[in-house]
Length: 95
Image (cartoon, rainbow, N blue to C red; front, top):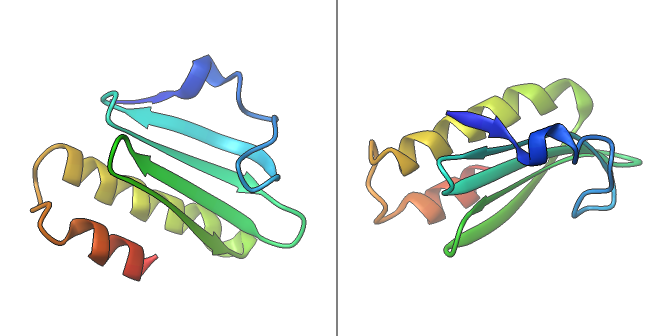
């Protein structure tokens, strides 16, 4: 289950791309995804703990769709529904 990081206390604070955090969630103590609004774009930063950190940039109207897609793929990976052999390369190339 996805849970809000720090019970939602990070929302409204500054994110890793110096924007304002809109959504900040963690899954299974294994990964995290954060959506933030920056001055000229939106940034989605995700992390698989101990293995990968990646940030994708987009415009506002795409942000929730991309965020949801990335979140779903991260969850499938953590749940073992896809192979980790090429996940990181495929994921970072896609986003």
